[in-house]
Image 1 (tube, helix red, strand yellow):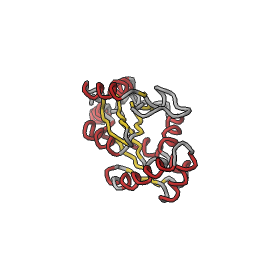
Image 2 (cartoon, helix red, strand yellow):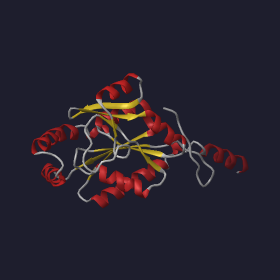
Image 3 (tube, helix red, strand yellow):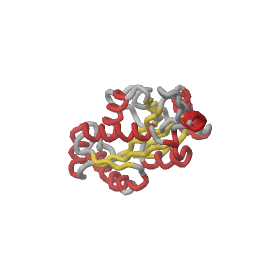
Image 4 (cartoon, helix red, strand yellow):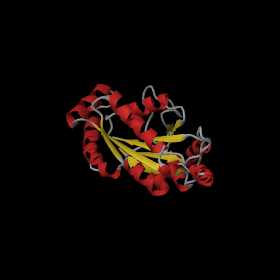
Length: 218
């Protein structure tokens, strides 16, 4: 994973943040991701490729890159993904090239991926990855949210509920764990985490120049 830098008002340069949001389906990560992108112009979205069918209202290239299984397998063979996983009988993966382009242009990158993808990304990029897991306040509330979406049949919702318990068990593989009982409050917490991570000393690669100048003139 190449490091990238972007300017700071003091002339510093820093490493980019690969900011991961994960949650069980219906817990609110996609809503919070949209809010974060609207509020943070220096944040770009990693758009995953998937073999699942497009849903009503989705746009190819905005919500996902919709590809067939043959195309997806070819991308895997070409090592074109940072990470990929098999979820709900479909495949999802993060294409490398757009992520590197965003990093190169000075953007941090937001990922809306599951625990498997977060784990793979961390193995590749290590300290550049910040992992945030969002929990529902209860499983009953999660079921209500999935039902209110009215996009899935009841058997699909049942499958998502079964998977949710497994996903929650991976909470300890994340740097931050939040409960989304109020979407605005949860969004504010996520935004605070992003701001703090951007300021970490380990990411301020250009700070050493100022330190040397201060020590020389002190």
